[in-house]
Length: 329
Image (cartoon, rainbow, N blue to C red; front, top):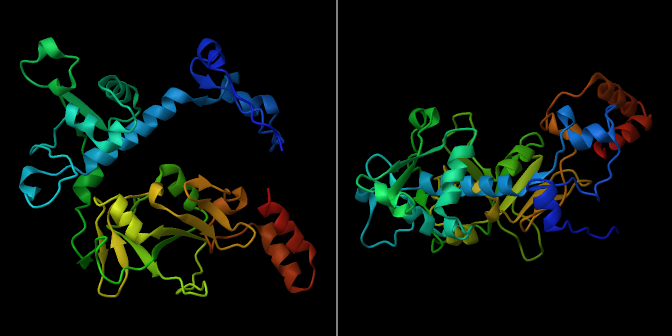
């Protein structure tokens, strides 16, 4: 096994402008006629690596989006409940100082300069700032500023999902041990890259999960033909993210209209035995092979694959070997 190679901070700061060089451990062979120089340098011959600053800004932007999407108005505040969401005014504005104190933002050690940088460098306008009146002398004070999420067309087209059944909490009775979200090989990499299971751009107002219990002998209470199954321990998810509204329909299905971040996932399992565990306990174990990403469970294969299937039907085993080689690329 190759030893880990540590890149000194001096190399990052002095020579690379905050960008890590490509890993010395990833020695993949060039494909599709591209040279290693093109693969490493990218288009135009420019060096390509991993930006520490950009990765941090993306994390902060996602945290801001999570917090600001879940703000509530003063009318929604119940004096008997512990309010974990920030309270916004009628136009959605929230004090920046309150945002910086939110646990999701505070854990990132975020300050006002970070928020300003994220807004200035974002390729899409997702947030906006405004300074409170009579605070010109305190421009650097977060308490002098307010922030809100810029509404999108999707916000105006898709209304919040109505209550469709029993609202669940960690104290609810008869909670299933797990809920499972099923998806395809084509969509799973997109879900993983976005960091959460979402309703997506199709207009669907809620996500449907299947209830699963595990017997004493280890058997599951369900059979699935989905390409990929994402497992979420429901009670733990309810305790970790009480802001997510989970509901149980009359038919027994578990649904939510909120994003389900991968921090709540226990595992993601592929139906194909040669792939198996794709994601477990916050770590990516395997990636979906490129040959499977371009189609779902019922996707159309290329003409060459059809010929392989015909040979399999006639007893020729060469087609099966060819398909295995493609899946292992």
